[in-house]
Length: 521
Image (cartoon, one colour):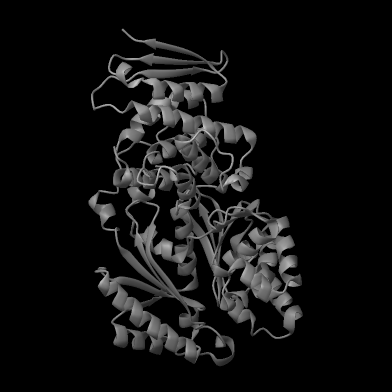
Protein backbone atom coordinates (compact mmCIF):
# COMPACT_ATOMS: atom_id res chain seq x y z
CA UNK A 1 0.00 0.00 0.00
CA UNK A 2 1.35 3.42 -0.93
CA UNK A 3 1.20 5.90 1.91
CA UNK A 4 0.10 9.49 1.47
CA UNK A 5 2.35 11.87 3.39
CA UNK A 6 -0.25 14.18 4.99
CA UNK A 7 2.22 17.09 5.12
CA UNK A 8 2.87 16.85 1.37
CA UNK A 9 -0.55 15.75 0.08
CA UNK A 10 -3.28 18.14 -0.95
CA UNK A 11 -6.73 16.59 -1.40
CA UNK A 12 -7.68 12.92 -1.40
CA UNK A 13 -11.22 11.65 -0.97
CA UNK A 14 -11.92 9.81 2.26
CA UNK A 15 -13.02 6.77 0.29
CA UNK A 16 -9.48 6.42 -1.01
CA UNK A 17 -7.87 3.32 0.57
CA UNK A 18 -4.88 5.36 1.74
CA UNK A 19 -7.22 7.39 3.93
CA UNK A 20 -7.61 4.37 6.20
CA UNK A 21 -8.71 6.28 9.29
CA UNK A 22 -10.89 3.52 10.72
CA UNK A 23 -9.06 0.30 9.97
CA UNK A 24 -8.69 -1.98 12.96
CA UNK A 25 -6.10 -0.47 15.32
CA UNK A 26 -2.90 -2.45 15.62
CA UNK A 27 -1.65 -1.45 19.06
CA UNK A 28 -3.27 -4.53 20.67
CA UNK A 29 -2.02 -6.87 17.95
CA UNK A 30 0.70 -9.23 19.27
CA UNK A 31 3.15 -8.02 16.61
CA UNK A 32 2.73 -4.46 17.89
CA UNK A 33 2.62 -5.31 21.59
CA UNK A 34 6.04 -6.87 21.16
CA UNK A 35 7.22 -3.28 20.71
CA UNK A 36 5.70 -2.07 23.98
CA UNK A 37 9.15 -1.85 25.54
CA UNK A 38 12.11 -1.57 23.16
CA UNK A 39 15.49 -0.47 24.49
CA UNK A 40 18.14 0.92 22.15
CA UNK A 41 21.54 2.45 22.82
CA UNK A 42 23.44 4.68 20.42
CA UNK A 43 27.18 4.88 21.11
CA UNK A 44 28.08 7.96 19.09
CA UNK A 45 31.19 10.04 18.65
CA UNK A 46 29.89 12.74 20.95
CA UNK A 47 27.32 11.08 23.22
CA UNK A 48 26.01 7.75 24.45
CA UNK A 49 22.25 7.58 24.78
CA UNK A 50 19.72 5.06 26.05
CA UNK A 51 16.13 5.29 24.82
CA UNK A 52 13.37 2.93 25.88
CA UNK A 53 10.42 3.19 23.52
CA UNK A 54 6.81 2.26 23.84
CA UNK A 55 6.39 1.75 20.11
CA UNK A 56 3.06 -0.06 19.97
CA UNK A 57 1.11 3.09 19.05
CA UNK A 58 3.18 3.80 15.90
CA UNK A 59 4.28 7.23 17.22
CA UNK A 60 6.69 6.03 19.89
CA UNK A 61 6.38 7.17 23.47
CA UNK A 62 9.70 7.78 25.20
CA UNK A 63 9.36 5.61 28.28
CA UNK A 64 12.95 6.45 29.27
CA UNK A 65 15.61 8.70 27.71
CA UNK A 66 19.10 9.41 29.07
CA UNK A 67 22.18 10.87 27.40
CA UNK A 68 25.79 11.07 28.57
CA UNK A 69 28.17 13.41 26.70
CA UNK A 70 31.33 11.31 26.37
CA UNK A 71 33.16 12.80 23.34
CA UNK A 72 34.55 9.40 22.36
CA UNK A 73 35.67 10.81 19.03
CA UNK A 74 37.52 13.83 20.40
CA UNK A 75 41.12 13.82 19.11
CA UNK A 76 40.53 10.71 17.00
CA UNK A 77 41.97 12.27 13.85
CA UNK A 78 45.28 12.99 15.59
CA UNK A 79 45.71 9.87 17.73
CA UNK A 80 43.71 7.25 15.84
CA UNK A 81 42.30 6.15 19.19
CA UNK A 82 39.22 6.80 21.28
CA UNK A 83 39.39 9.64 23.77
CA UNK A 84 40.59 7.86 26.98
CA UNK A 85 38.39 9.92 29.32
CA UNK A 86 35.44 9.51 26.96
CA UNK A 87 36.04 5.77 26.79
CA UNK A 88 35.84 5.52 30.58
CA UNK A 89 32.66 7.61 30.69
CA UNK A 90 31.09 5.56 27.91
CA UNK A 91 31.83 2.29 29.67
CA UNK A 92 30.34 3.61 32.91
CA UNK A 93 27.28 4.80 31.00
CA UNK A 94 26.80 1.38 29.42
CA UNK A 95 27.11 -0.32 32.80
CA UNK A 96 24.36 1.96 34.10
CA UNK A 97 22.16 1.44 31.05
CA UNK A 98 22.43 -2.33 31.30
CA UNK A 99 21.42 -2.23 34.96
CA UNK A 100 18.49 0.07 34.13
CA UNK A 101 17.36 -2.31 31.40
CA UNK A 102 17.39 -5.19 33.87
CA UNK A 103 15.33 -3.12 36.32
CA UNK A 104 12.78 -2.40 33.59
CA UNK A 105 12.55 -6.08 32.64
CA UNK A 106 13.52 -5.31 29.06
CA UNK A 107 14.08 -8.36 26.85
CA UNK A 108 17.47 -6.89 25.92
CA UNK A 109 19.20 -3.82 24.56
CA UNK A 110 20.06 -3.21 20.92
CA UNK A 111 23.36 -1.32 20.97
CA UNK A 112 24.91 0.31 17.91
CA UNK A 113 28.23 2.13 17.68
CA UNK A 114 28.96 4.58 14.92
CA UNK A 115 31.88 6.58 13.48
CA UNK A 116 34.20 6.92 16.47
CA UNK A 117 34.22 3.23 17.39
CA UNK A 118 34.39 2.01 13.79
CA UNK A 119 37.28 4.35 12.92
CA UNK A 120 39.39 4.00 16.09
CA UNK A 121 42.31 1.58 16.23
CA UNK A 122 41.15 0.54 19.69
CA UNK A 123 37.49 0.26 18.67
CA UNK A 124 37.51 -3.57 18.69
CA UNK A 125 39.21 -3.58 22.10
CA UNK A 126 36.55 -1.21 23.44
CA UNK A 127 33.78 -3.47 22.12
CA UNK A 128 35.36 -6.45 23.82
CA UNK A 129 35.72 -4.54 27.08
CA UNK A 130 32.05 -3.57 26.96
CA UNK A 131 31.04 -7.18 26.29
CA UNK A 132 33.20 -8.44 29.15
CA UNK A 133 32.07 -5.78 31.66
CA UNK A 134 28.38 -5.54 30.79
CA UNK A 135 27.44 -8.48 28.58
CA UNK A 136 26.30 -6.04 25.88
CA UNK A 137 27.27 -6.65 22.26
CA UNK A 138 28.06 -3.50 20.31
CA UNK A 139 27.01 -3.63 16.67
CA UNK A 140 29.53 -1.44 14.91
CA UNK A 141 27.77 -0.20 11.79
CA UNK A 142 29.32 1.40 8.75
CA UNK A 143 28.39 4.84 7.47
CA UNK A 144 25.92 3.63 4.87
CA UNK A 145 24.05 1.58 7.45
CA UNK A 146 24.06 4.56 9.80
CA UNK A 147 22.52 6.63 7.00
CA UNK A 148 19.87 3.98 6.37
CA UNK A 149 18.83 3.76 10.01
CA UNK A 150 18.65 7.54 10.35
CA UNK A 151 16.51 7.75 7.23
CA UNK A 152 14.21 5.07 8.66
CA UNK A 153 13.88 7.22 11.76
CA UNK A 154 12.62 10.04 9.57
CA UNK A 155 10.14 7.66 7.93
CA UNK A 156 8.85 6.75 11.39
CA UNK A 157 7.58 10.31 11.73
CA UNK A 158 6.86 11.06 8.07
CA UNK A 159 5.63 7.91 6.31
CA UNK A 160 5.70 8.37 2.56
CA UNK A 161 8.04 11.36 2.69
CA UNK A 162 10.54 12.16 0.00
CA UNK A 163 13.73 14.20 0.13
CA UNK A 164 17.26 14.12 1.50
CA UNK A 165 18.08 13.08 5.08
CA UNK A 166 21.24 14.57 6.58
CA UNK A 167 22.39 13.12 9.91
CA UNK A 168 25.33 14.86 11.55
CA UNK A 169 27.18 13.20 14.41
CA UNK A 170 30.40 14.06 16.15
CA UNK A 171 32.77 12.42 13.66
CA UNK A 172 30.70 11.93 10.51
CA UNK A 173 27.82 13.21 8.43
CA UNK A 174 25.56 10.89 6.47
CA UNK A 175 23.18 11.55 3.59
CA UNK A 176 20.33 9.31 2.44
CA UNK A 177 17.51 9.88 -0.01
CA UNK A 178 13.98 8.74 0.82
CA UNK A 179 11.01 8.30 -1.48
CA UNK A 180 7.63 6.57 -1.01
CA UNK A 181 8.59 4.94 2.26
CA UNK A 182 11.93 3.58 1.08
CA UNK A 183 15.55 4.52 1.55
CA UNK A 184 17.53 4.96 -1.65
CA UNK A 185 21.09 6.12 -2.24
CA UNK A 186 23.15 6.86 0.84
CA UNK A 187 26.69 7.99 1.58
CA UNK A 188 28.89 8.90 4.53
CA UNK A 189 31.48 11.63 4.99
CA UNK A 190 33.99 12.88 7.61
CA UNK A 191 32.16 16.19 8.15
CA UNK A 192 31.37 15.75 11.83
CA UNK A 193 32.37 18.74 14.02
CA UNK A 194 34.84 16.72 16.10
CA UNK A 195 36.71 15.71 12.94
CA UNK A 196 36.65 19.28 11.64
CA UNK A 197 38.45 20.46 14.77
CA UNK A 198 41.54 18.68 13.47
CA UNK A 199 41.53 20.10 9.94
CA UNK A 200 44.63 22.22 9.32
CA UNK A 201 44.57 25.81 8.12
CA UNK A 202 41.94 27.31 10.39
CA UNK A 203 38.60 28.44 8.99
CA UNK A 204 40.01 28.92 5.51
CA UNK A 205 41.32 25.36 5.49
CA UNK A 206 38.00 24.00 6.84
CA UNK A 207 36.00 25.93 4.24
CA UNK A 208 38.03 24.44 1.40
CA UNK A 209 37.84 20.96 2.94
CA UNK A 210 34.06 21.13 3.50
CA UNK A 211 33.46 22.40 -0.04
CA UNK A 212 35.57 19.65 -1.58
CA UNK A 213 33.86 16.89 0.40
CA UNK A 214 30.39 18.33 -0.21
CA UNK A 215 30.99 18.48 -3.97
CA UNK A 216 31.94 14.80 -3.84
CA UNK A 217 28.73 14.01 -1.96
CA UNK A 218 26.72 15.85 -4.60
CA UNK A 219 28.38 13.80 -7.32
CA UNK A 220 27.33 10.60 -5.54
CA UNK A 221 23.81 11.65 -4.52
CA UNK A 222 22.83 13.62 -7.60
CA UNK A 223 20.32 16.47 -7.62
CA UNK A 224 18.30 16.68 -4.39
CA UNK A 225 15.90 19.61 -4.63
CA UNK A 226 13.10 18.32 -2.40
CA UNK A 227 12.86 18.63 1.36
CA UNK A 228 16.01 18.45 3.46
CA UNK A 229 15.50 16.60 6.77
CA UNK A 230 18.10 17.49 9.40
CA UNK A 231 18.89 14.83 12.03
CA UNK A 232 21.36 15.16 14.88
CA UNK A 233 22.13 17.17 17.99
CA UNK A 234 24.13 19.90 16.27
CA UNK A 235 21.33 20.58 13.82
CA UNK A 236 18.79 20.69 16.64
CA UNK A 237 20.97 23.18 18.52
CA UNK A 238 21.09 25.43 15.45
CA UNK A 239 17.31 25.14 15.15
CA UNK A 240 16.91 26.22 18.78
CA UNK A 241 19.01 29.28 18.04
CA UNK A 242 16.95 30.00 14.92
CA UNK A 243 13.80 29.88 17.05
CA UNK A 244 15.42 32.25 19.55
CA UNK A 245 16.50 34.68 16.83
CA UNK A 246 13.02 34.74 15.27
CA UNK A 247 11.11 34.82 18.56
CA UNK A 248 9.29 31.70 17.40
CA UNK A 249 6.56 30.81 19.92
CA UNK A 250 6.29 26.99 19.70
CA UNK A 251 9.40 25.40 21.16
CA UNK A 252 8.97 21.99 19.55
CA UNK A 253 11.93 20.97 17.43
CA UNK A 254 10.34 18.11 15.52
CA UNK A 255 8.94 19.40 12.20
CA UNK A 256 10.36 22.88 12.77
CA UNK A 257 10.88 24.47 9.36
CA UNK A 258 13.69 26.67 8.12
CA UNK A 259 14.52 28.18 4.75
CA UNK A 260 17.87 28.79 3.10
CA UNK A 261 17.48 32.46 3.97
CA UNK A 262 16.78 31.78 7.66
CA UNK A 263 19.76 29.41 7.82
CA UNK A 264 22.02 32.15 6.44
CA UNK A 265 20.62 34.67 8.92
CA UNK A 266 21.11 32.33 11.87
CA UNK A 267 24.65 31.40 10.84
CA UNK A 268 25.48 35.11 10.82
CA UNK A 269 23.66 35.59 14.14
CA UNK A 270 25.74 32.84 15.77
CA UNK A 271 28.99 34.24 14.37
CA UNK A 272 28.26 37.65 15.89
CA UNK A 273 26.86 36.47 19.23
CA UNK A 274 28.44 35.85 22.60
CA UNK A 275 28.28 32.05 22.56
CA UNK A 276 27.94 31.68 26.32
CA UNK A 277 25.01 34.10 26.46
CA UNK A 278 23.43 32.36 23.48
CA UNK A 279 23.99 28.92 25.02
CA UNK A 280 22.27 30.00 28.24
CA UNK A 281 19.35 31.66 26.45
CA UNK A 282 18.73 28.62 24.24
CA UNK A 283 19.40 25.99 26.95
CA UNK A 284 22.13 24.22 25.01
CA UNK A 285 24.81 22.23 26.83
CA UNK A 286 28.37 23.58 26.85
CA UNK A 287 29.65 20.45 25.11
CA UNK A 288 27.11 20.84 22.31
CA UNK A 289 27.56 24.58 21.99
CA UNK A 290 31.28 24.18 21.43
CA UNK A 291 30.50 22.27 18.22
CA UNK A 292 27.80 24.59 16.87
CA UNK A 293 30.09 27.08 15.05
CA UNK A 294 31.71 24.20 13.17
CA UNK A 295 28.32 22.70 12.36
CA UNK A 296 27.15 26.03 10.91
CA UNK A 297 30.01 25.90 8.41
CA UNK A 298 28.81 22.48 7.25
CA UNK A 299 25.14 23.51 7.13
CA UNK A 300 25.88 26.61 5.07
CA UNK A 301 27.70 24.57 2.45
CA UNK A 302 25.10 21.80 2.54
CA UNK A 303 22.28 24.23 1.75
CA UNK A 304 24.27 26.03 -0.95
CA UNK A 305 25.19 22.72 -2.57
CA UNK A 306 21.86 20.90 -2.63
CA UNK A 307 19.46 23.90 -2.71
CA UNK A 308 16.50 22.16 -1.00
CA UNK A 309 12.98 23.52 -1.46
CA UNK A 310 12.56 23.60 2.33
CA UNK A 311 14.25 22.35 5.49
CA UNK A 312 12.67 20.37 8.33
CA UNK A 313 14.15 19.34 11.66
CA UNK A 314 13.60 15.70 12.61
CA UNK A 315 13.87 14.68 16.25
CA UNK A 316 13.71 11.11 14.98
CA UNK A 317 16.97 9.57 13.84
CA UNK A 318 19.08 6.45 14.23
CA UNK A 319 17.45 5.25 17.48
CA UNK A 320 13.96 5.65 16.05
CA UNK A 321 15.24 3.94 12.91
CA UNK A 322 16.17 0.94 15.03
CA UNK A 323 12.60 0.84 16.34
CA UNK A 324 11.23 1.18 12.80
CA UNK A 325 13.42 -1.77 11.82
CA UNK A 326 11.48 -3.98 14.24
CA UNK A 327 8.01 -2.82 13.16
CA UNK A 328 5.88 -5.11 10.98
CA UNK A 329 5.16 -3.52 7.61
CA UNK A 330 1.47 -3.07 8.30
CA UNK A 331 2.31 -1.00 11.37
CA UNK A 332 4.79 1.06 9.35
CA UNK A 333 2.00 1.73 6.86
CA UNK A 334 -0.28 3.29 9.46
CA UNK A 335 -0.60 7.04 9.90
CA UNK A 336 1.44 7.77 13.07
CA UNK A 337 -0.91 10.56 14.14
CA UNK A 338 -4.15 8.61 13.80
CA UNK A 339 -2.79 5.39 15.29
CA UNK A 340 -1.40 7.17 18.35
CA UNK A 341 -4.63 9.14 18.83
CA UNK A 342 -6.58 5.89 18.75
CA UNK A 343 -4.19 4.47 21.33
CA UNK A 344 -4.75 7.53 23.54
CA UNK A 345 -8.52 7.21 23.21
CA UNK A 346 -8.46 3.51 24.12
CA UNK A 347 -6.27 4.23 27.13
CA UNK A 348 -7.72 7.46 28.51
CA UNK A 349 -11.19 8.29 27.16
CA UNK A 350 -14.28 7.65 29.24
CA UNK A 351 -16.04 6.03 26.30
CA UNK A 352 -13.48 4.49 23.93
CA UNK A 353 -14.84 4.19 20.42
CA UNK A 354 -17.05 7.27 20.67
CA UNK A 355 -14.50 9.28 18.67
CA UNK A 356 -15.45 7.38 15.52
CA UNK A 357 -19.16 8.04 16.11
CA UNK A 358 -18.46 11.71 16.84
CA UNK A 359 -16.49 12.01 13.61
CA UNK A 360 -19.36 10.51 11.64
CA UNK A 361 -21.80 12.94 13.23
CA UNK A 362 -19.83 16.15 12.57
CA UNK A 363 -18.30 15.05 9.25
CA UNK A 364 -20.98 16.79 7.10
CA UNK A 365 -19.59 20.15 8.21
CA UNK A 366 -16.18 19.16 6.79
CA UNK A 367 -17.24 17.01 3.84
CA UNK A 368 -15.57 19.30 1.28
CA UNK A 369 -12.32 19.65 3.24
CA UNK A 370 -9.11 18.12 1.83
CA UNK A 371 -7.77 14.90 3.28
CA UNK A 372 -5.12 16.70 5.32
CA UNK A 373 -7.83 18.68 7.12
CA UNK A 374 -10.17 15.69 7.58
CA UNK A 375 -7.23 13.87 9.13
CA UNK A 376 -6.98 16.60 11.79
CA UNK A 377 -10.74 16.46 12.34
CA UNK A 378 -10.43 12.72 12.90
CA UNK A 379 -7.51 13.16 15.32
CA UNK A 380 -9.42 15.79 17.28
CA UNK A 381 -12.46 13.52 17.61
CA UNK A 382 -10.29 10.73 18.96
CA UNK A 383 -8.65 13.07 21.49
CA UNK A 384 -11.73 15.05 22.46
CA UNK A 385 -12.23 13.24 25.78
CA UNK A 386 -8.77 12.01 26.81
CA UNK A 387 -8.15 14.93 29.21
CA UNK A 388 -11.36 14.55 31.19
CA UNK A 389 -9.42 13.93 34.42
CA UNK A 390 -7.95 17.45 34.35
CA UNK A 391 -9.50 20.05 36.65
CA UNK A 392 -12.44 21.70 34.85
CA UNK A 393 -10.89 25.16 35.28
CA UNK A 394 -7.77 24.05 33.37
CA UNK A 395 -9.14 21.34 31.07
CA UNK A 396 -9.25 23.51 27.94
CA UNK A 397 -5.66 24.70 28.37
CA UNK A 398 -4.52 21.18 29.20
CA UNK A 399 -5.97 19.96 25.91
CA UNK A 400 -4.22 22.71 23.98
CA UNK A 401 -0.93 22.09 25.73
CA UNK A 402 -1.07 18.34 25.17
CA UNK A 403 -1.85 18.67 21.46
CA UNK A 404 0.80 21.25 20.68
CA UNK A 405 3.63 19.71 22.69
CA UNK A 406 2.92 15.98 22.64
CA UNK A 407 5.32 13.58 20.95
CA UNK A 408 3.24 13.04 17.83
CA UNK A 409 4.59 12.27 14.38
CA UNK A 410 3.17 13.50 11.09
CA UNK A 411 2.16 16.97 12.31
CA UNK A 412 3.36 20.33 11.06
CA UNK A 413 3.57 23.04 13.69
CA UNK A 414 0.55 24.85 12.26
CA UNK A 415 -1.38 21.57 12.43
CA UNK A 416 -0.41 21.14 16.08
CA UNK A 417 -1.85 24.55 16.86
CA UNK A 418 -4.98 23.83 14.78
CA UNK A 419 -5.54 20.59 16.68
CA UNK A 420 -4.84 22.25 20.01
CA UNK A 421 -7.20 25.14 19.30
CA UNK A 422 -9.98 22.77 18.27
CA UNK A 423 -9.58 20.81 21.50
CA UNK A 424 -9.51 24.04 23.51
CA UNK A 425 -12.87 25.00 21.96
CA UNK A 426 -14.15 21.53 22.82
CA UNK A 427 -14.30 22.87 26.40
CA UNK A 428 -14.66 26.63 26.06
CA UNK A 429 -16.16 29.13 23.64
CA UNK A 430 -13.39 31.70 24.04
CA UNK A 431 -9.69 31.60 23.24
CA UNK A 432 -8.85 35.16 24.24
CA UNK A 433 -6.89 35.58 27.45
CA UNK A 434 -5.19 32.17 27.43
CA UNK A 435 -1.44 31.80 27.76
CA UNK A 436 -1.35 30.33 24.26
CA UNK A 437 -2.43 33.41 22.33
CA UNK A 438 1.04 33.97 20.87
CA UNK A 439 0.87 30.53 19.22
CA UNK A 440 -2.29 31.40 17.33
CA UNK A 441 -0.21 33.49 14.95
CA UNK A 442 0.89 30.22 13.32
CA UNK A 443 -2.65 30.04 11.89
CA UNK A 444 -4.38 32.58 9.70
CA UNK A 445 -7.80 33.90 10.69
CA UNK A 446 -9.63 31.42 8.45
CA UNK A 447 -7.81 28.47 10.06
CA UNK A 448 -8.53 29.81 13.54
CA UNK A 449 -12.21 30.02 12.69
CA UNK A 450 -12.19 26.48 11.23
CA UNK A 451 -10.60 25.15 14.43
CA UNK A 452 -13.22 27.00 16.49
CA UNK A 453 -16.01 25.43 14.44
CA UNK A 454 -14.47 21.98 14.86
CA UNK A 455 -14.15 22.46 18.60
CA UNK A 456 -17.74 23.66 18.97
CA UNK A 457 -19.01 20.81 16.79
CA UNK A 458 -17.27 18.33 19.11
CA UNK A 459 -18.56 20.24 22.15
CA UNK A 460 -22.11 19.77 20.90
CA UNK A 461 -21.64 16.22 19.62
CA UNK A 462 -20.15 15.11 22.96
CA UNK A 463 -23.54 15.85 24.56
CA UNK A 464 -25.11 13.04 22.53
CA UNK A 465 -23.67 9.90 24.10
CA UNK A 466 -25.82 6.88 23.38
CA UNK A 467 -25.71 3.19 23.90
CA UNK A 468 -24.63 0.98 21.03
CA UNK A 469 -27.47 0.37 18.58
CA UNK A 470 -29.35 3.57 19.39
CA UNK A 471 -30.43 5.58 16.35
CA UNK A 472 -28.50 8.80 16.06
CA UNK A 473 -29.62 12.04 14.60
CA UNK A 474 -27.99 13.68 11.63
CA UNK A 475 -26.49 17.07 11.03
CA UNK A 476 -26.13 18.65 7.59
CA UNK A 477 -24.41 21.84 6.54
CA UNK A 478 -25.38 23.86 3.47
CA UNK A 479 -22.60 26.47 3.13
CA UNK A 480 -24.17 28.35 0.21
CA UNK A 481 -27.48 28.71 2.04
CA UNK A 482 -25.68 29.23 5.37
CA UNK A 483 -28.06 26.67 6.85
CA UNK A 484 -27.22 24.15 9.57
CA UNK A 485 -29.79 21.37 9.74
CA UNK A 486 -30.28 19.01 12.67
CA UNK A 487 -32.59 16.01 12.58
CA UNK A 488 -33.34 14.41 15.95
CA UNK A 489 -34.26 10.72 16.16
CA UNK A 490 -36.59 9.53 18.94
CA UNK A 491 -33.52 8.18 20.78
CA UNK A 492 -31.83 11.55 20.51
CA UNK A 493 -34.69 13.85 21.51
CA UNK A 494 -34.25 13.37 25.29
CA UNK A 495 -30.55 14.25 24.96
CA UNK A 496 -31.26 17.56 23.22
CA UNK A 497 -31.76 19.56 26.41
CA UNK A 498 -31.06 23.20 27.20
CA UNK A 499 -27.27 22.85 27.39
CA UNK A 500 -27.09 20.82 24.19
CA UNK A 501 -29.29 23.37 22.42
CA UNK A 502 -27.10 26.24 23.63
CA UNK A 503 -24.01 24.47 22.29
CA UNK A 504 -25.69 23.80 18.95
CA UNK A 505 -26.60 27.48 18.65
CA UNK A 506 -23.05 28.47 19.52
CA UNK A 507 -21.80 26.22 16.69
CA UNK A 508 -24.29 27.82 14.32
CA UNK A 509 -23.11 31.25 15.43
CA UNK A 510 -19.50 30.42 14.56
CA UNK A 511 -20.66 29.22 11.14
CA UNK A 512 -22.79 32.33 10.65
CA UNK A 513 -25.68 29.99 9.98
CA UNK A 514 -29.43 29.84 10.31
CA UNK A 515 -30.68 26.63 11.91
CA UNK A 516 -33.37 24.10 11.09
CA UNK A 517 -34.03 21.65 13.94
CA UNK A 518 -36.69 18.98 13.61
CA UNK A 519 -37.53 15.75 15.37
CA UNK A 520 -37.69 12.85 12.92
CA UNK A 521 -40.79 10.67 13.02
